[in-house]
Length: 82
Image (spheres, one colour):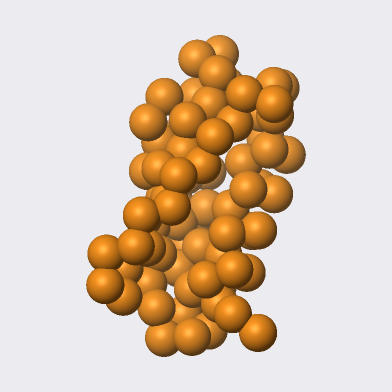
């Protein structure tokens, strides 16, 4: 089982569940050594839903992605592009 693949599926699932327009979601995965950065682009109307009040939702998503990636000893973070 690959931890990176699990994190990929998890990030996509959570982001698409939060937004009103899941067809507008694009996620780009950038591997930088042990660190994986997920660059997420959503519809402009959905950015606030992904970030949440005071950034609580995006912080939770980052925590879950980091936990999923740590299964194979990696690290992950999620960045919202817009």
